[in-house]
Length: 186
Length: 441
Image 1 (cartoon, rainbow over the protein chains, first blue to last red):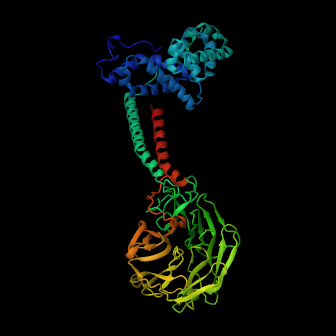
Image 2: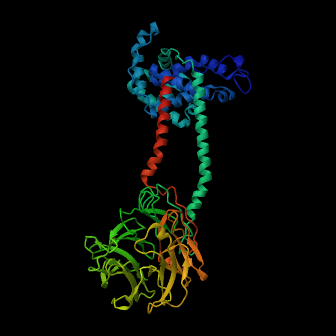
Image 3: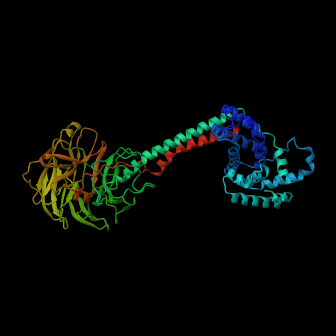
């Protein structure tokens, strides 16, 4: 999750990092958000290497405009926009080629053995969604954003978010009935 | 399952490893972006500054409010990449106000340049050894030797109906329908004159043919009579034709004659010295009473450079009814006259003119005013070696049009590709480098 704030002591009027050198404040922000950004990227791309590339490129973009972003207050909305737009842009430019699925990480949770099959199914189902549909699902159900917030991040209307969500869930249900209870989510 | 399942899948992802120069990469990106903005701003600025100029250039056509057009008061040399008549995507330049010849083109040989009444510049490629053609009175066609008609409004070229005529176009009839052509009857063997200069075979005199450009019909006006026809002029009413050409073995004599335009019956013929000749297709005065001749003092056939430059030229007038001098004093010229094009205000002979025969070739259009004053009607840059002017514009005295400048955009497609290639290469390199950096990051 990337919604947590950095050290609240660093927030202040006009900037979340008043008085700090730009590079230091950027490093602080990245350190605080990296885990959440990495996970969101992983859900978006379904591939660890692509997720790594996505996060790195997004952060380079953020670094190139950091002073303005930091001066505007909370950097999260902008960073999120960069990440998700970058992802969709990759897909449009067909930069994302099919890669062999990465090996399951060594840090797999031990007591999730029973859920392994379900996770595999879900992963495969996610892979069948369009980038925009994946983005909508990740924003809504992983980042817990409202439809309005999701629309702001993706730069589209709330109606588009709703239709994308509906289509994504329909497709997921078709391939992964285990996700039936997602219907009741916000 | 649901949100939890997504979170559990996400938990598999360890924090991304970030390069040490992440911040520096962002700074570099910012610099590149700012550079791009600067380039774009400059490009926009250039466009904003240049567009009104370009638009004004387009508006600077030679067509005044009455829509009739005018002979421009000057011309420029065409750009190296100037399109030919009809060449895509520039297209044809429309009816021409004039055609001039210059070797300062990408062909490095004498090339015709049609200057449209709209201010356009288009090249007319000339084959090796091809002589000058004639511009039809309305400026729509350029007629090449061999009677190939280049339509300046479409770029299409067609052969006048019938067998090709190997001869030099000489003069259009006043109504523009017929063209006088001197048809060579010499065989392929060169006949050498007494001075070892190749000349026309006096045993095979040429014919004078009037060709109807609309139908290709040919009418023999005169058969034989002259070794060749070097100049011709129609009377303004179209009833008489004045011709001039060499006679005798070795082209040692010259004959001037006026004949009936329909029957070819000569009204009079005069043998004149080699130093005298009909001024050109515009030699006949508008009132039909006099003919203009160009004459010079100096060396004739065997002429070295110094002798050639030492010639002194003058304009003479003879009675069109008799061929005899009218008693008016000849007007001396400092430079060398070319061909008479017409008359200004019914009084002043208009002709092409080499103001400085000893210098770099430059042919202008001048009018011989009262007291021998020469008024330059069309000024040209050095390198212009000949001029043709649409007779309709000359007839109405429409001179002094604005000087058109050749458009840099009137270029063939290959010029655009050539210009775009370096830009495309730079863009490709920049994108390739950027992609590589992004992958590295």
